[in-house]
Length: 390
Ligand SMILES: NC(=O)c1ccc[n+]([C@@H]2O[C@H](COP(=O)([O-])OP(=O)(O)OC[C@H]3O[C@@H](n4cnc5c(N)ncnc54)[C@H](O)[C@@H]3O)[C@@H](O)[C@H]2O)c1
Ligand SMILES: [Zn+2]
Image 1: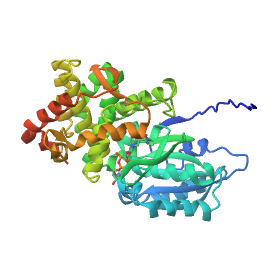
Image 2: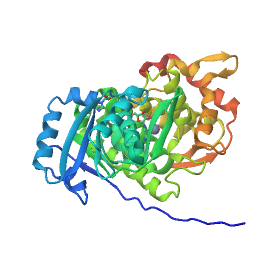
Image 3: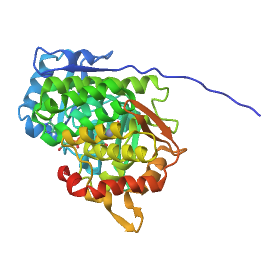
Image 4: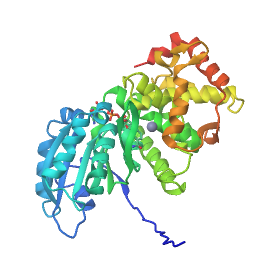
């Protein structure tokens, strides 16, 4: 037998920057992230339609900004693409971006700069990752969820066959630039829904952060930008630390602790035909898994109560009617989300739960009776828990 063995590793390095008024002429942060042997580098901008509508002067600002930094950036085009989850379902929109990469001669030393919510960033990042096997990509997240979680990570994706994130790659960005100004035009719904990811990561990793969110809950709902900036920073930091330090940035193993509360969340998003936001679905998934771990005898009643109270206080949903859908007696449809979650990850079923606030742990099977009890509890309270449903 003959064999030629290979072993190499690739080091990635990127930063998430926090700024305000990124496209003002004086702000050179974006230009400073551009490096190439052949400057100015070609830049193709992709803008979320929700952002373009809320910031009608943005296109002009990008033009002036790239003109002012013409030594670094050569603007090829600014595309607008539909915002929201449909960005990840729309094959034509994906094709349009790939076509622009082709038309404008965007190469591996050029930049695709995406500005938008998590959905547009996932989809534009996917286009950048597959064109030429990887075009440089800068993310400019414009929602709370994208600034504190989805935009600072290494994944991009596109939905297919009715399955969320069925297509996608692990491809770290060149840089992430969070501009707090963009958050001013978010609907209250999008302002609040991203907080779920902060609750999630606090529950599995950082009890002090959870306490801080409890303290800031009223300020957050009142749109206090100082409280929100602190939340986004810590949440992004915990996510980035996890990716770099947990030893599995590209999720080769079976565990995915950052997906606490997500097996139900992903299922409910698709069961609701994406009527609910990802962050809203995560709030429900967290409530459900906390009830489950309480019934399984891990989480105590006081901690469970704190989680439920916080979700309520932030006007996030605890349930939607789809959670209670049953096609056969004693079986809630949402439960098939457990197997779909395993299938997406591959390997052994691994679900992260919490033992107490700030302490995550993993299980490899779910006791269906306890999960039914958790859903039953929410159903019994449905007149109350459905109040905040989107
Ligand atoms: N890649 C990852 O690791 C990862 C992690 C978590 C979530 N996600 C994905 O992120 C997506 C959810 O992202 P999201 O919560 O940001 O929602 P979203 O991208 O669906 O955006 C919500 C709405 O806000 C609009 N919008 C965006 N920025 C705005 C602004 N500044 N002002 C006004 N309107 C604005 C959008 O047009 C859209 O209508 C989901 O598809 C989810 O699967 C990805
Ligand atoms: Zn999430």
